[in-house]
Image 1: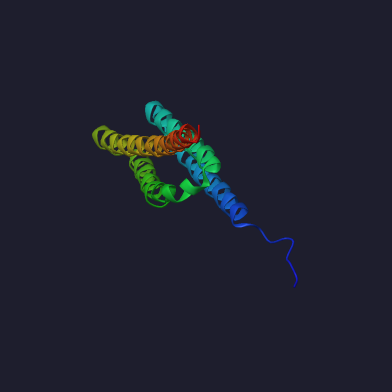
Image 2: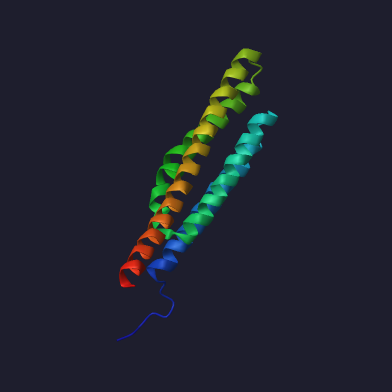
Length: 144
């Protein structure tokens, strides 16, 4: 029986998928921030980028939680990109101030939703950790 020494374990493949997803996610943020010229909106977008990086760090430590990031990666990120592109297009079209402001406010609302979703996922990971610690303590108490 021959063994492929280069074959990756499922854990290694999952870690690579997490790494690739994080790179893609953060690269998308880096492209988006170039299109945002409003300081507050830019700051909110960079804050979300920071939370996203923290989330991927947590997921790297808890790979079983990766699947729970799928909505963030596959639904939210395209919606955010669309909102940034729309804001950029309207802002550069010579549209009136009111239209640009509305587009920016819509974008900021989407960013805030993404930040909340990211923080909620991180809370879920931490609560799972706490549950595991609590269960371990219960088992130890029963053993003693």
